[in-house]
Amino acid sequence: MHRCRTKLSDPDNRTTKIILGCTLRLFTVSFSDRISAASFCSESCNIVRNASCDSYAGNLELSIGTTALSDGESMRPLYHLDELGCEISTDEDGNIIRLGLPAQDADKAILLLPPNDTLKEIWFGGTDITDNGLEHLSKFPALEEIYFFENRITDKGLASLSTLVCLRTLIIGRGGNEINDGTKFIYALPLLQKLKISETPLKDRSLKGLSRLDRLQQLDLYGTDSSDVLSQELARLGNLEILDIPRTCITDRTVKTVAELRELESLDISWTNVTRACLDDLTRLPQLKYLYLAKLPGDGSLESLAGMKTLSFLSLRECSLGTDDIEVICNLKQLKCLDLENCIAPPDSLSRLKKDLPDACAHLSANELRTSTKNST
Image (tube, rainbow, N blue to C red):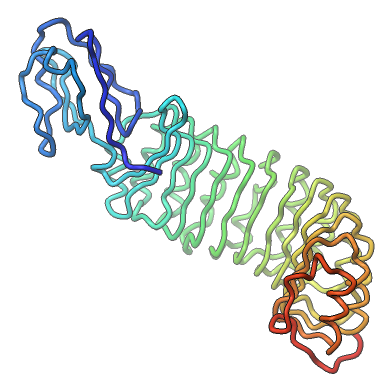
């Protein structure tokens, strides 16, 4: 992202395109020859009022407060985006495609921003945006990605998303406890492909209707209060490729449903209530490449991992591993990376793993893999 400071030339003295923030080409100001242009005046710039058009025939710095579209027409406010504290990125044609709101007065900034049909991505993370500010999102009908993080939004604010029919990605991190029934507005977004609601106390009732997102490819509910009620919604999400549900309240029951998602390539069920028994169900996933099983209980066997022929990444961090478990892991020759951070394993495990899986275990050290005298699972 870069700050906006744009100059343009108007050698014909006929039409000046006011470009906000490099290239927000939303306002075209037409002046006939020699018509008084009582325009481009603001407290922050020194442009002379009532100058004739040919005064602007050279380079014009667009730090703009107000403009008149023609003689006698009322003034209306225009704002330079960097004066509002915004940050932008543009495409090759100069159209604004990404916008970051200021940390303070975000409601004011989004209120003053003019409509834009090229803006694709907007960041609210860390700002003081409220539900009132979000009511102005309808000015950006082409939005495809929205990012929230530690924002004071509620169900009322989520209702403002309902007009954004082009939205494909929605990220809500640490959303607070006032997001509940408003999720129904999210589930009505027809093109949504990526949804992340993390570290938010989302209740089971808030999951009702999730299955309506039939285009969803990536779902992340990390750190929510989701339970096995989630399985009823997941069953209809046949296009899911990435599913992250760590630090939730799910059990093996949900994993049985997950095992029917034939397109799934990545699954994170770390720090949940699942057991090793669920691994047998996961062997039915024909495209599973990444599997995260942190804090998986030690009771039972890891033998089912041998049936996951497409697996290239495995995380077993914070697990207790026995000799039999190490044997199973050493036979996973297709692994490209193995994560055993803070695991407990028999004394010779590290050398055995590095010998049998040299590439996958190249990064492993004694500091990551702690030893114990446990001989078997």
